[in-house]
Length: 173
Image (cartoon, rainbow, N blue to C red; front, side, top):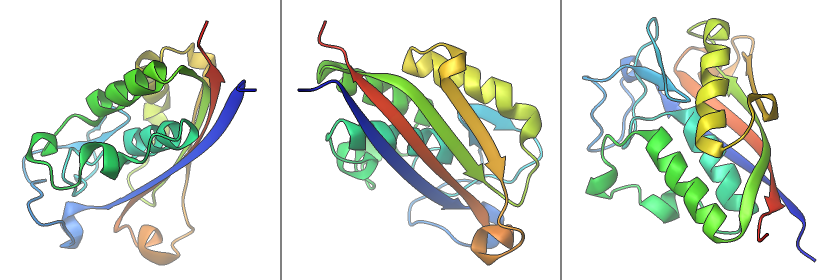
């Protein structure tokens, strides 16, 4: 019996200012984007797409719950068509694939882990963007923020991590 499934997603990207990077990544001309929201006071993240760790973690949670793979296997980490891509657009493609498999998001719970920049003022815009992409009421989307109390790579301000849990419900009608 297929009624619901739970999935988790994780993504981490370094800030461009740390000197870390991925071959072929271009972060010099873009802003920091989290859940489709431009963050004015943060350095950009390095990644093949726009490096939106929030959107990536949500997409991975959906793909995992629906057993459709992971972000890298669906879009390819070196695919030139994904270079610089809008991660919210990638998330909408994942939502369509999940729907084609007969599933719909019931809720998502996303945690962004960053020592910098301060993100609380962006929470509602992030929730609204994710709710729209997932075809959910905003009440079904949680976005939380935490730090690592200056411990480790994230605590040293070298990047941002994101964890997401989601519930998928059977949507075969």
